[in-house]
Structures are given as C-alpha cells and as structure tokens.
Image (tube, rainbow, N blue to C red; front, side, top):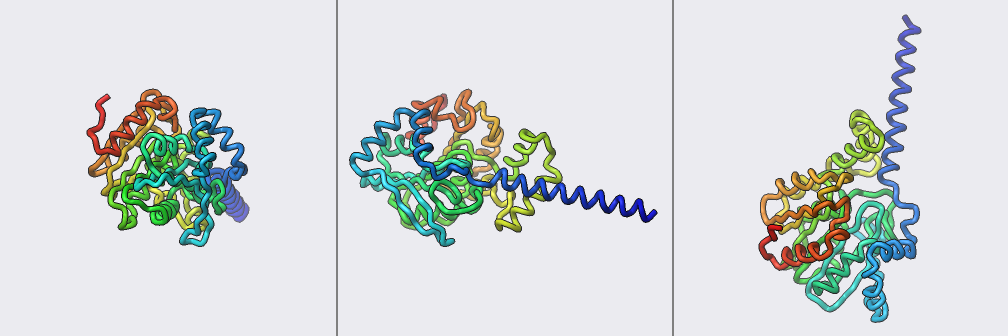
Length: 312
C-alpha cells in the first residue's frame, strides 16, 4: 500500500514539474525579445526589401535632418527610444509596431502619414523592443501606459494612434485610458490586433504545439502574473474597446490565420459607437497595406476626415 502511495506521489511530482517546466519554456518562447532587436541596419534592409518606396522618402528626410532619434524616460524609469519626424504640423501620428518588431519596420506607415496626410510622426520602440529598455515583452498590457506617455510628450491638437498586430492590440488598450487633456481630436486605428493575449496564446499553443489550453495556459498565466505583474486576461483589447469613447478604424486581412479574422468581428461588435470596419480581401497577417496600398490610404484618409465609410 505504501509503495503504491509513493508511486502516485512521485508521478504527481513529475507531472507538476513537467507542467511548470513547460510553462517557463512557454513564457520565454512568447515573451523573450528578438535577440537582434538593436540591429537597425538589418531592420532598414528588411523594410527596403518589402517596401522599396520608403527608401527615397527616408533619404529625403535624412538629407533634411528630419528623421531623428529621441529618447524619453518613462514613468517606470526606463529609457525608451522613438523615431520622430516633425514637419511643423498640429497633427501627430503615434505608430505602434508589432511583436518582436521595431519602429523601423513600420516606416511604411510613417510615410503614409507624413508624405500623404501631413502628420508629424512618433514611432516608439515598445518595452523590450528595438533600442528601448526592457527584458520581457508586455504584449500591450503595460505598453498602453507608455503609449499615453508618448502622447503626452508629443501632443498636438489632432492625433491618431495606429498600431499593427500587437501594436493594434496596444492601440485598442490605449484608447480606454485617460488621455492628455490638450488633445482636441484623436482617432485610433487597429490593424489586425488580437482580442486578448489569452485568446491569441491559446490559439498558438494549439496551432504550434497541438496542445489544449488546459493546463499549460493556466500555469503560464500564473507565472506571468507572479513574475511580470500582468496576466493574459488583463491584456484584453476586447474589454478596452467596450470602454473606448473614441473613433476607431478596424482593419483585418480576410486570410489572416495568425490573428484569426474572426477576432476583429468580435472587437467591432464590442465597440459601442464611432467605429468603421474594413476587411482587406485575401490579405494575410499584417499584409493589408502590402496587398492593397491605394485602398488602405483611401480608407485611412476617409476615416481621419470623418467621411462616411466606403461600401466597397
């Protein structure tokens, strides 16, 4: 009898150790920064290969000394980096990159706002990305507070926050936060952001590893809360849009499987008012602009000018 009890105890200990060991692996797999995050030359090469139209635009900014690096100290005491273009406008776009990306990767959006729409540009590297400090990715949960800080530092009369993927989720979470009172008009653009970190990671555990959410999601979430002081459930864009009073444009590719297109329909339904939805035909994750450049700009221009959304 004692031998059987000890066998059961040993098996339980092994199972618990295996689950928590797997949870530590999953946390690092999901939240460790890109090891080449500070390699700006690599980021620019990646940008120019995919969006060659950005090269002459960036060259012109550099000749005018208009594309600048700026650093701020966040309320948490970290030193964060951003790219900044000041064209003397009273309109400023805060553009937020995706998971394991950096500000440079999304200069194609900066070109739209500066070259086509006449905005100043602020493009931060989020916590643990690019040249900003930080050891673990925050998936937008705490990044929303840093976004508000950037809005405060660079506020103008009219502003827009535009994020892609994790940046889209960060954008939505930011939209429910108290914003600087000096901003008269602000819009938010979510391009393929997820409903919540719980939803996104649950799907990826099944897609990448063929595992059910229980028990690994629960133990990984617990470790995240104990170690990093935020949880997957707290990182919820869905909860944020329910409370957001600001105009929001939702963009999502119809062929997105990384952040399933079904998520944007839940987000759009949760937003109580001042909302516009565009499903980009045949676009995969974060490729809506790449596949539909003219339409993307038209949709953006109409949204920011408060025109009625297109029916196409």
